[in-house]
Image (cartoon, rainbow, N blue to C red; front, side, top):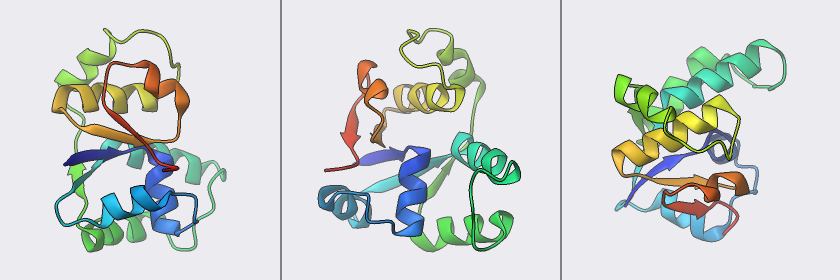
Length: 131
């Protein structure tokens, strides 16, 4: 299975907050699952950290590349195709980062792991991160 982690799911996984459901944790740990992390999530985390809205124990620029590699997560760049696909999405969700993740999931045929109920209004496959 190919999955894309929503930004909050990535943070919950890396911080081991206990907010992810057992099924989601099993899915992420499974060797048969390819885990993708969008450049949009890294961008969003960077902005929140710079604004002081996200507390990180180590410098973000050091910890994130190391952790993504250690976890075996794959980077998903933002392409022109992704950016153009955002235009065709219904306006169920106003958050630009979430809209980019939705467009990427659609364009790349990925299942988006999220706890955001608004995302389920889109015509993409999702997994409830709480399960």
